[in-house]
Image (cartoon, rainbow, N blue to C red):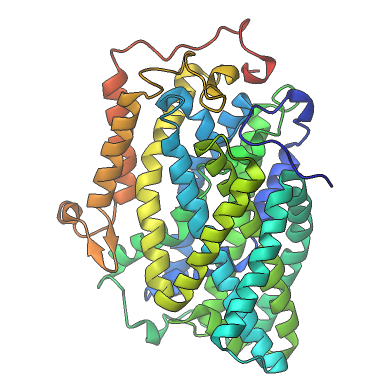
Length: 477
């Protein structure tokens, strides 16, 4: 299969041959991995019992999906990725905000997936063949996972889609067998080693779990969904079908692995160390399936994240090819893996990462969706590519390529989110107004969206081509 040549340029309609089923496959198959499974471990590690953990994960995932899924329709109309599409609101240079947010999101999740997958692989190999759990062993395993991930990401969308189809079936089977393997030791009681509620009482801890373990999953896709829907043609598939496929893919692709993580956390009594507890509690007969899940699942998920990172860097540096951009970000992600292994506490690092990125990413997503509603899904795909062609002008040029109103609204929303966040090592000053409960994502989204609406209320609506001027790929069906 040839290496994909497309970067963030507009995909011709003849090449947009994917459909809603492919979208479900890629969202399901790529998420059945330890990098997503481990988020289900967070609620038990916060001191919640089984039912509280499940309810927090489900509530957060459903809410996050309701907010995130409509973003899939943007790239369905623009035939390019979401950060480039956001140029309609932020300006053809201002869309760099989305590229940076997407780059950081994908970077963190890529590193996390390789980190956790590698740790489980070393633990399993230690039990199977006596591999020493030394720095050298971890380095070799991380390097092998990173190399396999790079190969899939460089080849591009078609290879990753084929891989996801296989993983959707194979990983589902491995997880079902895993439930049987860990079931004998399952408990619904809170884990004593967690030390009680992380934030001192039930509801603040439950809300933290809903955001960190539930909401963070869909929010991770705010810039990724367009990487897949840009290959779906609106001339052949309706927006309704694509939206339904996105809902199904996100709900199933996130809840199945996360709830498996919650289940195994209680069965393995893994309050403090998920990877180590998962391996130690595994019956001998499940070690080989666990090794397959840790390796294949990690490569599938990290490959898609790395692919998205390559697109975002390609959008930031138009002179770089997608393949070169992917190799560059792969090096950075691998460095983050080693730093994470040797310098960070898993629970603290994961919680801080998802809360911070959710706080700054949510207002960008809200503003992009408001713009989509205003223009009724009609875009000028050629004008969105001005920056990538290193030229100027077009209806999304605004002032020097920046829409200062949209950028200012996002910055204000992100700032409020950062001031209202509650991390293991930092508490924002606005927490006193919310009773100590982390509402950073909600406040950032509301403030960012309200500011954008207020700043643009009297301004002329963003120019959009008429139906007769727009390309077939950008007209609402």
